[in-house]
Length: 249
Image (cartoon, rainbow, N blue to C red; front, top):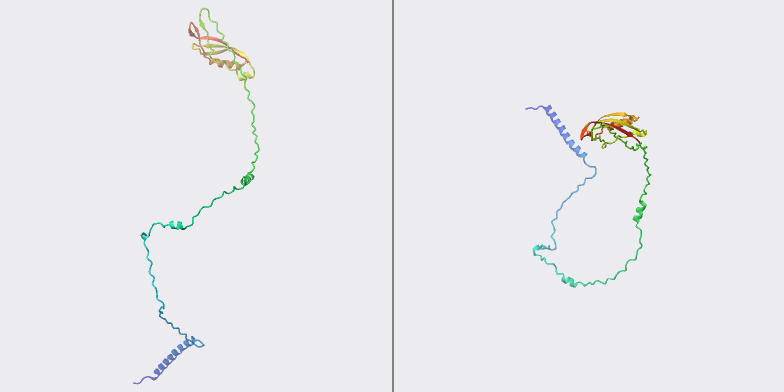
């Protein structure tokens, strides 16, 4: 049995080259990390020694016993012996101290300070109130009420007894202010018609006073009059009266 020579030689050559390469690579890596100087190895040895025995004996102290609170005697300590042993103390006679010397009276600094710091009261200017006085109103002079005279109308003979009309309870006419200011005077003669009840039903001017204000004042006042009617034989009757009204100052 014959083997081929060339392939076998070629295979051996390849294996030899690979083995040489594998041997060369580890040697190069080892040379790269080695130091250039001398190499020293330090050895560390750990020795554990057993504890040595003590030369002196060990003394074990007993634990102190604790007494309960109930066993303690609550009675207070006897202080009679301590008091007897202490030296007696007697108070020395006190001598009366002399009175302190009289100090002069000083004015309080607070009062002075307050007096100095008190602000001065500012003087306020006096204010005068001027009231305008209105001119006095012109007042009408006190007018004397006019005299009113009732002149009875003559009655026919044979009809008696007869009682005339009575208007004395009525106020007199008021004097007009303009007439009193102008000092006007006069007498108005009026004719009155009075019914059975005593009311004035009609007023007529018989004679004027010469001043219209006086005539109107007399007529307006007499129209409101009411009095006692005239009577004949005790019976009220209607009557006609002439009344002069005089205005004078």
